[in-house]
Image (cartoon, rainbow, N blue to C red):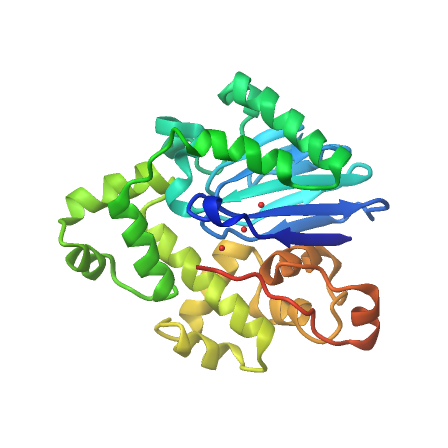
Length: 299
């Protein structure tokens, strides 16, 4: 498995977190996990579409081109053949760049992009194939520049997201509204419309990501990491980890530390936390991956 992230050009940083590419020519068929990160994504599955395992036990094939809206639990995916995915991770305040006013109703879904916006979907499909032909993200950057030229993020929500990111989610929503100089009744619906989840949900995701980064980068135990990131106690952190990732802290730490292939099902999630998958040489040495995905980040 090879997972890599590419930063956007400066003029798109307001709207795009990164472009990522996932390739696996010989997947093992294990069900893989991805954790929520508070970002929506445009996805092009140029290989065999992945199978999505829903919380209700239903299994369905992903659409070749889809919009991954905000997720409030672990996403379980399974390869049915060679994997070649290209994703564009949007910034939280620009989550409505594609879905518009429909964004809040798409939570926990990944609808077909051709159903959501047929004209844009056709151009996105062409740009994704252009990436392959040119071995460059420039076709996708051009398409996104054109789309972003007609989109203006809600400046209040841009500020709200920045405050929550700076606090790694450890900020009460009432205090957030006070800092922004607005009421909760003003903040909450505008945040949901712009980001696709409530400010409280987004704060919980940001705190989860901060906790995962600490567990990945350091030898801190779950109790120390939980205290650092504002959880009331270890039990609180454990409940949040299990709820958002579907895995216990012990399993997560085994997957994130030491032998990077110690838990096959969590390799993909670990790669998304870092922003890159470990190279074979790094894995053979048992060393840590050279990069961690930067968060303010995120399919």
